[in-house]
Amino acid sequence: MDAQTLKKLREWFKKNAAELPWRPADLDAPRDPYAVWISETMLQQTQVSTVRDYFIRWMKRFPNIETLAKASEEEVFRYWQGLGYYSRARNILKTAKQLVSDCHDPCKGSRNDKRGERKAALPSTRKELEALPGIGAYTAGAILSLAYHQREAILDGNLVRIFSRLYALDFLPTESRDAAEIYWNYAREVVDSPKAYMHNEALMELGRTVCKVKNPDCINCPLRSSCCAALENRTTEFPPSKKHIQKDWHGTVLVIESADHKILAVHGGQKFFKNQFTLPHFESPRNATAGLPAQAEHYIDADKVQSVENIGKFRHSITVHKMECYVLYIRLNGKAPAPTSSEIMWVKRGQAQDFFASSFCLKALSFLEKT
Image (cartoon, rainbow, N blue to C red; front, side, top):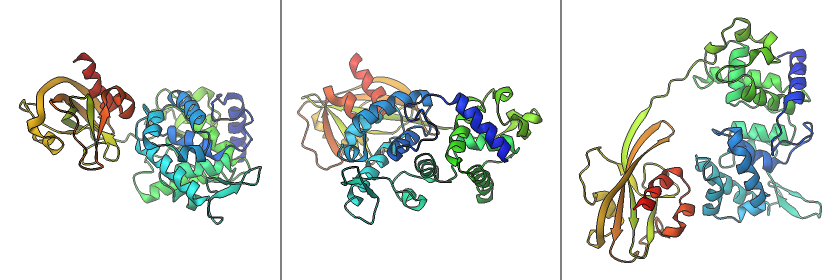
């Protein structure tokens, strides 16, 4: 991308940059690395319109790394609830705790604030950033570029789409190491400039608002005169489609309630949500027989079961899994037994909506209201 094209891109961005809670009014101003980290992580697989309110609430509750590091995983999940991919939230918390711990080491990621006190901070090198939980090549590049104004390349879905159309690339960076390197080389060309940070953000904005997946607004694109796909009227051909193999999954979700109105939550040993507390669930045939499933006896004593009732069915999607789930409501005739391991927890029914962070669990629990 030549200097004249980049100038057009900057001019377009200055006129069309949307007002976003994580974007300063002065587009040349360096940003808070923490805010960049949180916003860019939230924006992964999530629309900007959805992330706005989540970001505002998050920053109000966790305004800095130190505050976040003191929070519990359950509270962090509550503020993340609805964004999906909860491993992102877990990794954010892990990184915050690690940065605070590193703050005590003068050789690691810390800085002095205005009062001369040590303060946890995100490091300013790609190697250090990518060593932190959940921070990959893209997020590291975004932090270094937008916050520290370094000439670091980034490559997200928006830039892949733009480069594919701009240079008529009929392959994706995920196809091979060589394919990825071609895309990254174009990304590096963009940041070979003192305004690298603006070029990166302008391209992300362009992909979001103009060079869209469907119905791209080529007439108003500042790169139109240089775009191979637009000039040849072939934008619908780029980038090439990636075929996803849809996987059907049929299962059963257990809502187990004790006589003192507590719901069973389990950690680990599950098909989905392996690393967080969730409702027990397992794969089952569509014609599963009625009665207490054997899987439930991993957690409860069959002799303590008062009733088993099929209370509903819901559909859900997780990554490539298209799911259909029955909900079994199992009532016990005694109080919640003492947990036999740290992988089991009993949650008061009135607190279950807040405790279970995933929409998967909330869909199952919604049937309780009708019971």
